[in-house]
Image 1 (cartoon, rainbow, N blue to C red):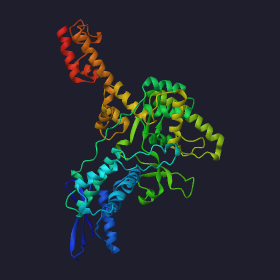
Image 2: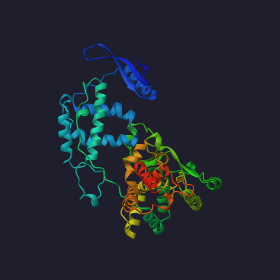
Image 3: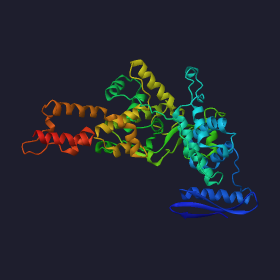
Image 4: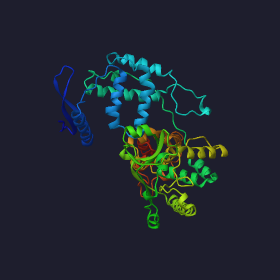
Length: 460
């Protein structure tokens, strides 16, 4: 029988097994949560009952990857992550180094493998002929994901006592340069909304920008998670609760994971289709959040709800009511490519700067940071990022305008001996009208604020 032992804040599943030499050995497996440990204990006890409790016998890289997916991936990965990670391992790892013996996997060999991937054609799901000419090789960002997966894979191999150490720890993947995503300025966004004639797209743009939503979160919004009562709007309490997302997933992955994380699966249009639209829980707990609505957007939702109810009444039984905020004219869920295509057409028709729909989320976070004086935690609450560092790392470029202002202030006040801006002069009592903390918040650079304060003291 297997047992669960708590040790140093983690949970260990302890059981006996028989090795290849017929000797009984004790095995300890560590899990972060009690639920994970309990699930593994149940699996061990079941295999003991049917006489199939065997330890992994992995000779090749492919053996290890298969075992890693079956015993680690199924327990740890969310549905979309499972599908993505399995795809990477199936497309890039198994075909290239799957036949290699585990003992031959070294840091030097892995670095050669990473370099070879740079010239390997990337596997694409899209078969549209329009994109055929973009037959690119595997990107450095993808190779970093391969590296991360292999590191996790070999960590498990060490725990399973298949190898003595993790060779991936000492291998270095190719450097990748993260491209800065193009975003719209608020002036461009305002212009786009004034030109948009599609009411559904207009609402989608307003929600994405005001609530910092990912497109899956936007399309997964249901009315039961929205508070737009007259009192809430009046009190500034109108809000949306983000607790699910709409994605299309592999039906095979759904089966493999027993529908883990799926809240609702929509009926399939084609019975023998390989994918299915589902509403699923967010990938991380931080993605579940409440976002307060600007009063204007809340009133847009009120009007949208009225019109949607009128459509329901007109169509009767022909309307499939899934309580979705953004749905097709017949109530069925919208594919993200429907919104993306409408957004692209708006851009092309009006010669607007080319961005993707997800850029609206970046614009939202960018301007919230600028307008609230750099309150990262408040923006993190809206965006659903797991860590505040993710916000600062991704959006550090937004202070460029403020830094240019810093330089101009120094040029005017210090080098050209001009009068400082009125807001920075001392008042009649001799007290500074703007203290260093306020200057720091305004300029986004505490060191510059300190320098300017010193300059102002000198001038006064």
